Amino acid sequence: MRNFASYQVDVHHRTSGVIKTVCEKCRPTRRNKRDHSLRVNIDTGHCHCYHCGADFYVPDEEEERRKAERKAERKRQSALAPQHFRRPVFDASRTVLSEATERWLVETRCIPQSVIADLRITEQEELMPQSGQKERCVCFNYFEGEQLVNTKFRSGAKHFKMVQGAELIPYNIDSILGQPSCIIHEGELDAASSLAAGFKSVISVPAGANANLAWMDRFMETHFEDKKEILIAVDSDAAGLKLREELVNRLGAERCRIVSYGPGCKDANEHLLKYGLESLRIAIQQAEEVPLEGVFTALDLHSELRALYDNGFGPGADTGWKAMDDICTYERRRMIIVTGIPGSGKSEWIDELVLRLCLRHQWKIAFFSPENIPVVYHLRKLIEKLTGCRFQNGFGMTDGLLARSEEFLAENVCHITLKGSATPDRVLSKARELVARRGCRIFVFDPLNRFDHTPEPGQTETQYLSNLLNKITEFANQCNCLVVLVAHPRKMNRNPITNSTPRPEMYDISGSADFFNKADYGLVVERDREVGVTRVYVDKVKFKHLGQGGEATFVYDLVNGRYLPCEESHETGIPPAQRVRNTQFDNTCWLPEKDLFGQMVDVADDETQG
Image 1 (cartoon, rainbow, N blue to C red):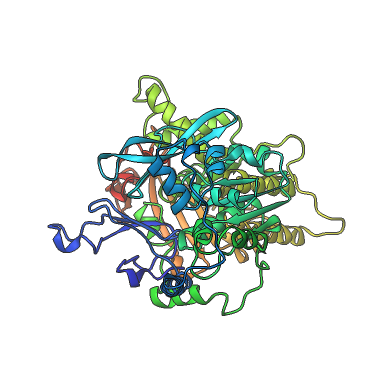
Image 2: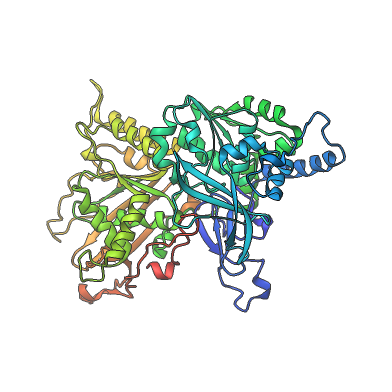
């Protein structure tokens, strides 16, 4: 958790997700002082103002302490240069870059000319978006085999950009192929520093301290699965710590070790500059194991406690459905159990729920949904929700819109389909692979009765279901995911007098009361065909800062499959067809644009998302 208050950022007591708020940096000079131009990612601490361009990170208290220590150490070291350090000697006869650039790399950044040549570093003049001017840039070329895949440009003013539209791949990726171990850095100069220290299997992430690791997907099986040891050697600032957490989560804590650069050094190149090659080699060799999982003391959680104390409790990730956000918000590491009688629209409503969370908070989705077979039928429904258009040529859907939809779904949505027996253990095993390979953060298991259940001999149904729910909860917690589980209720008998079927409650789910007892969220979906609305009842929210529960009403749009918030009149004497009012129709396209690094940019505000 992070202390946003100390950076004059009001997160409205939220604890996770992406929000917009007022930017205090440009607010005094603005005419509209209430404009929410500052985008805040509470999970990563990244803040960006779309009005004044302010871009900064909010670290935790531990990072603030380390920053103060580094400042004091730099002040002490500035007066005393290390005597044991031998700086490389620049050899003009070996220059492949301009002399000024190669002198900067060799004499200022201490990268040997042999490493510069091996990495095929070049330079050129390039128009940089940060300054709007052409600047002389060092070019870090990203090769795969002999094919140049991408280039990162770095100017003397520390402006960066990559080739627009090019694939993001790790820097120096060929060096780790077939090797038993590797080192992962945050920057190209850090990777070059490790190579200078004598290590051979070294890469750098392509887009800096970005927690979105979609670039790993293509390389997991070929380059990472065979690794017995992976050294995570990223920066020690707040963004680097977040990247480290995501890398450990994807690659597995059991084979990861963490490199620490010591006081006054946040990365490998800084350590090289201060203490030399031998010291850097020792620091990497002494990488420590990932701390013991599941054992914490108050000191381990000091920064989280302090941030919680300063910021207070707040809601989780929102969906853009105001009526739902008022009664229920979401956190990862939780299990949502959804029920409702067959035909009530549970699956359709869940599809939109998880799409909204993906669009607003970049949480990738995986479905195990045997009732949505063939998968292309399900993809069609998702595309209609994303685009706001009927999936049919001539009804607003174009080839370009279809291509954008396919690209978005390919990056953010996948389906689990297993040959043979789909036991819970097999499905959860495949889900763990998707966490590692694709970074999935939402899993929809729809419905529970389509699993192939195999109780132990002598085990009762209640015992079996209790153990199963424990497994799913443990998976959600260990893999930092939100799990949506659909469970059908027992047979609901019609009222012989009113001829209506009562809506089920959580305790009506067939098999066990643990469906209510062990759920973090309990939702019931009911379709009222007479009135023409769908009601969603939030019967349980485990933590009160995430919501108090309640009821939200929607109208289903037959054209694009979206659920449109509405108000329902309960006045007597009004015909059912006239009870629905103030329906907010929405046929806007929700597909996000992308930035220079190929990452999704902010999606539309609540008003445009319905």
